[in-house]
Image 1 (cartoon, helix red, strand yellow):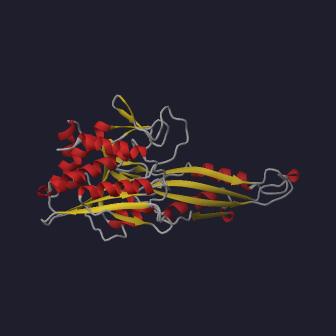
Image 2: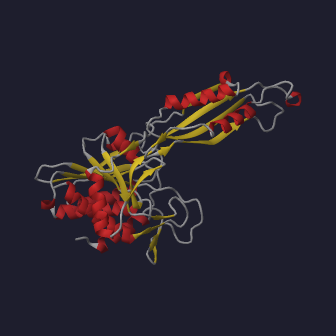
Length: 379
């Protein structure tokens, strides 16, 4: 059913291609060629300021009417920051592990999508409706490739995000905001402090500590939100001046039932309790792309049920339901395009770290699971 040698070749070939976010041109070209080898049209699309940063997508339509499903993964990886034990851009097999940048995140998932496409192109009588496959850029930064994809004339009812999580399927994700807080003080000569002057760093530090103790909404599936003060800056190192400004950047993961307005209100109320409400300004950090909102998919939805059934059929194990604490492109598909989305694909360890590795047997099994699931969903 699956050409194991071809699947492994694609997996290894893509690991060899350096596709750190911002440099997706070569892997985009590689995927385009593989799609055309199958006998499908590959469409290259670009976001405005990324004219050499392609995303690639294709469509395979049956002669029989039916639903439409999207298989999607990202082609970019993070960079190399630490010294590896192997060349990160040469796949190295050690037992069941394949080492290389992207071996886990997520060139195994991309390979599984390509092989799934190949199968249905060669067995077009085994499905109805439409299979769309998309390979997007910039996921590791601002997800511009996925937002750009949604501008195309595609309308899938459901999607499988082939991200690296093989022991569970994500049926929900929290949302995320990045928030900026500016706290004002009063400058003075530091020798006169504290009699004269108002140290903005001290006020901001107290506010930061207060923020991390603020309550959040608790969702029955997604759990609770979280606060993380990730950056604070103020003052002048080489001058005898009491700091009159301090800047905080706050990461706020949130769940259904919370909004930016309710979160901002909490911060302002915390500043009020400290007596610095009038000195505190709060705003959503500007970004070119929309922020990702939280979502959940019903666990008894057909997409979830069929995927879990086929997982057990292929692996003999139970596929657990998970609600992820972070965000990914699945948030965009659900909230920006109303595409019912689950997240499941071959995995590994050391994601974004040194000595990242994936498991080829999971790539193989994921491919089989995708094929069996699509046969059921696209009857």
